[in-house]
Amino acid sequence: MRIVSLFGVFVIILCGLCRPVSAQINKDYSFSLCPQFGLVSGHVEEIVYPTTTKAPMLSLLLWDMKPVFYYGFLMDFSPVKPMEKWGFFSGLSLKFGIPGPSGRMEDKDWLSDENTELTCYSIHDNITKEIFLLDYSAGVSFPFFNILLVKTFINISYMLFRFNGENGHGFYPWRNPPEKIFNGKVISYRQEWFHAAPGVSLGFSYKEYFLVEISFMATPLVISAGLDEHKYKEDYEHKYEEKIVQYRDRMKGGVMLEPGFKFFVPVTRRMGVSWEISWRYINGTRGDSYERAANTGEPIGSGIDVLSANEAGSGLSILNTALLFKVRL
Image (cartoon, rainbow, N blue to C red; front, side, top):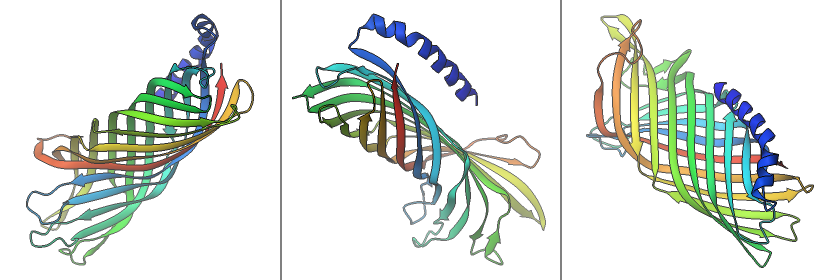
């Protein structure tokens, strides 16, 4: 809520300043404010890589977003008539996810030293607690023949996801009976991403009645962080003691790919409507994991870190669909 309040104050100040500022810049450029509404659908991945077991992964947790609706704003600075001559542009997009149920969380383990068969499996209700997406881009646009518009740009992105896994059931072959029923909160996960990516887009316009754009971004400059908190009940001579185990992951590398599509229609000289769709895919990040355990009544995260070097991984695959209403200030 603090982020939303600060952003609201910033928008009010921006709206008050844009007219005199734009007059000073000149009439070739303008500021625009675009309320946006949409949804993201897909999943994030939490991965543990093995050191001695046979399978390519020791553990894989899939956190669903099927789907999560969001609201937000896009602030844009760009040429008033981009099809007439080259110019600079920049944009800042903020998206705030609406908390709620968003599918399932699956937890899979491959613990065998002898084969690659799945050994443990559990499934839970996934509750999305928070999604925050920030993208800033800046670049240059070049028109050709008053029909084609080519853009080259740099995009900087920050993403935050928070989930709770609740209720559900699991299968553990060493237990008697092997099936376990879960009630209440079982696990929470927080995942953050930061990347910087070059991009290019190709647009087609017909007499400024509409603009169709396709875009593509790719980069290996990816940083990721994860915070996982598991609840366990351990049996000490038939006396069950609850324990919370915290895993803090720090990862980098891999690759980020994002193709996109946009269709914009001007309604009046100062207003327009845009429909956008994009797919963001990240894979191959890897790094260290730090484990801490705390018994019931102790502060979460107390104790001594246990380092697992180069065993942590993360991934992401989300489809974003948005409707934007552009207002030139």
